[in-house]
Image (cartoon, rainbow, N blue to C red):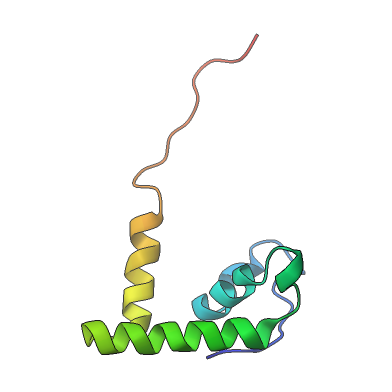
Amino acid sequence: LPHSGGRYAAKRFRKAQCPIVERLTNSMMMHGRNNGKKLMTVRIVKHAFEIIHLLTGENPLQVLVNAIINSGPREDSTRIGRAG
C-alpha cells in the first residue's frame, strides 16, 4: 500500500496524480481523533483488502475502482436561470 507523504495539494488538480489507495487512506484520517494516524488507516485498508480477496476472490484494487465508478455522477448537469 502506498505511503508516500507526497505534497499532492500544493497545486490545483495535483491530487489527481495521487494513487487511489493513498487517497482512500488519507480521507480516512479525517475527524479529530484520527488526525495524523496514517499507519492505522493503512492497516485498516490492508485488512479490508485481504477480506475482500478472501470473500470474492477478485483483485481488491479492481473492486475499489468499480466502487468509485459506481459512486460517481452518471452525467453532468448545469443550472439554467438565476436566483432572485
